[in-house]
Image (cartoon, rainbow, N blue to C red; front, side):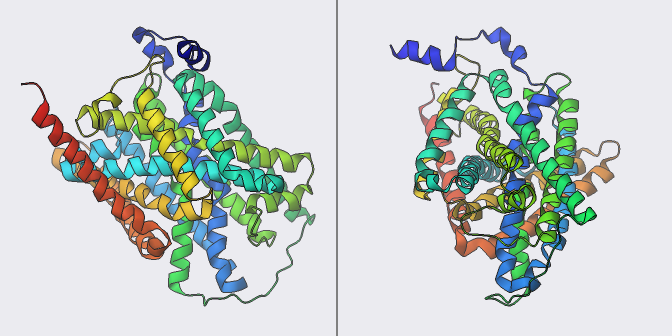
Length: 458
C-alpha cells in the first residue's frame, strides 16, 4: 500500500538516462528559480514603510529614495552574479566559489548561510502568501499555521515528482503574478496621470525621530527584495544547453522584472498615500484603492498569494542541490547525495519541508517576525561569493580580469556594508539567532566530516 501511495503522489520512476529530458527552458527556469526574488516585491515595500512610518509623514517621504538605493544595489548584485555564472558554468554557488578561492572555512560559512537562507525562504514565502490570503479572507487568519504547513506539503509533493513537472506546476502562477501586478502598476500610474485618483498628503507625527539609524533600518528591511537572486547561479546545470548562456539571460531578465515591480509598487504606495495596516498588506491596500474590491482586486491578491506560496519552490531547487554537494564533500550525511525515483534529491526535499514547517509553527506564521532572520544568511552568501570571485580573478588574471575583478569587488564591498547594516539594525529583532546558528552548523558539518574520516573503510 505505501508503494501504491508513493506512485500516486510522486509518479513512476525515471531512468537515469532521462536526466537531460528533465532540464529546464529559460521560461520554466524563470518561474522556478526567480519566484522567490520576484515574490519579494509583495512585501519589500511594506517592510520599508513599516519602519519609516515610525517617523510619521516625514519618514514616509523617504520611501522612494530608499527603494531607489535598493534598486541600485540590485543592479550591482545581478551583474556580479552574471560574472559568477560565466566563471562557473557548472554552477557557482557561494559554497563552491568561497571554498575554491577563500578556503574551506569560508566555504563552510557560505554553505551554512545558504542552507539557513533556503529554509527561511520557504517559511517567509509561505507565511507571506498566507497573509495575502487572510487579507482578502480575514476569517482564515486563525488557521494561518495549519494552512502554511499544508501548502508546504503540497509544494513538497510537486517537487518530489521531478524538475520538469514542478516547472509545469509553477510556471503559470509566476507569469500570472508578473502580469497582474504589472497591470496594477500600469493602471495606477495611468489613474494618477489622468487625475482618476489623487494623493491627499496627510501630516502626522510618529513615535520616533527621523534619524540616520531609522533610515538604515528601513533600507535593511527593504533588502528583503534582493533575496533569491543567487538561486540561478546555484542551479546552472538545471538549464538546457547551453547552460551558462541560458542561465545568464534568465538572471538579467529576472533582475529587470524585479526592479520594475519593486519600484512600481513603491511609487504607487507613496503616490496613493498608503500607510501600512495591521491585518492587510500594502499590495492589498493599493489594489483595493485602484480596483475597489472588484475582480481585478481578487486577481492581484490571488496571484500574489500563489507566487508567495510557490516562491518557496526556489529553495526546493537550491537546498537539495547544495545539501548534495556538501554531502559529497562529507560535510552532511551521505544519504543526501543520491537522487530518488524521479531524479531529484528526495531526502534533501523532505528535510527542507520538515525544518521550514517547524519554523512556521514556531513563529506562529508571522512574516514580520521571520523576515529579520531572513536576509542575514542571504548577504553572508552574497559577500563571500563576491570576494571569492575577486580572489579568483586576481589569481588567474585571464583576459579582461581587471574589469571583472572590479565589478565583483564593488559587489563584495557593497554587500558587506549591507550585511553590517542588517546585523546592526536587526540584531535584537532576531538576527542574533542566525549569527549564532551559522557557527553551530559549521561545527556540525566539521564533526560529520571527522566522523566519515574516522569510520570510512580503508
